[in-house]
Image (tube, rainbow, N blue to C red; front, top):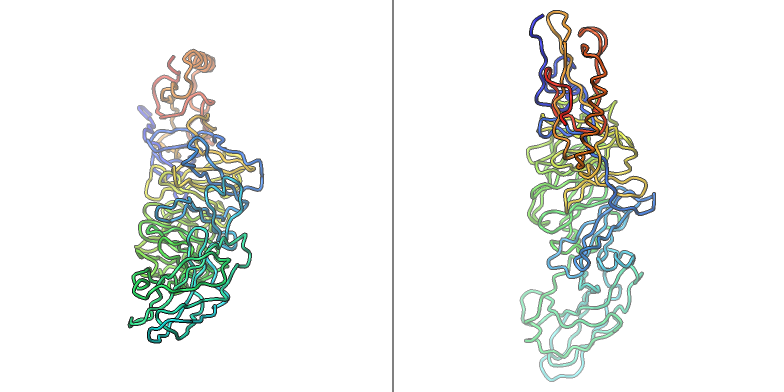
Length: 544
């Protein structure tokens, strides 16, 4: 057969669902440990060590910038991969507070306390236990009835719900004394309550508003109020009537774009007040039909993954957030598989990766992989994943992973098996970098300063009308200057490679006729150069 040739110029990822004979010329039977963004083959690089906790129990890690010590980063680690640590959605937070979810009762801490190794505080401000006692004495003005309440206030001026109102009748210009108030809180080491705010009503208002009177130390059991009503009426009105602490059983949470948390326990969805993570009004609560597995955020919305139908939550504030239940039953199989991307939330379901956004829930990998392949080969119940550029990157065993980009045929599906023991994988939202945790150490995924790992790209099966021997093959490679900077070492390595190549006689690929049972595997040429293109014809040597 004259002029037979195979030419591959644009390298793409796998489509496991398709037969090895029916995939396109550019698609792969095997695409492993490689990047294909540009259409050429580049081996993934090894991990680079970022930080070592020297504690093998660490399963999740966060790098916190320190504005006061720019050259020193603070690393915080946790022994559960489900724990999330969020910078506070607060306006002008001088304390640099961080909020922790996923380990029982929600907690928070300041950057300074984290730097000092101080423990976390419980999130929320407790309700006063004692209502107080009110009495009025003295004065010459007409009698009036007043109501008083007080709230507890934290070290950070976080305010809780008011006490039960108490009332008395007395003279407007008399001295009104509120006594028998709380002077401490249970577990003061976990709740930094330092103050009390006192409020009262003002006669003449048609609504029973409570106006701010004074702030006093929590140790003070009483306060005597003699301020004129016209002065008090110009003060702030009590806002914290519904600001309850978060429910104790919250399982986890995500941060919504407009400064509030969306959290869940069982089938219940809870919201914090906007820019007030300590306040969780019960009036905002919503509920799903099935147990919540987890959630992700995109745009102004959240995709909520459940044990049944997924939900779509949208709203610019907690009070106007609504839930939409999608008709398709696509239950989530692993909370750690949930990844937020620009176009929606991807998560592992029984049918593959499902995409949840405002249009519904879509089995986004249905054209890439079959349900049986997904369930049998990739253990979706064990998947832990992260956002890698605009791809979903996940590991289903300690050393086997996949990356999926449903919207890009170039890198639709790539496998990984050259990395040893992945305990956890996560994305740094500040930098977009991917971290890998292994044995208590944090590594940078695909570190540009590290060597390339062993990689493989295997083409489709090519069939000809007649038996045919292909006389020669050539692999065109990109410049190796970006891999080895020392030009002398490059030349030596290239000469060694060429010498070994010349020793081998020219022969048909694999020393057997095409069409036989033998299929040639062409591994990467050591760690010398990334393999860029594979074309038939041309020199097999590396230029010096």
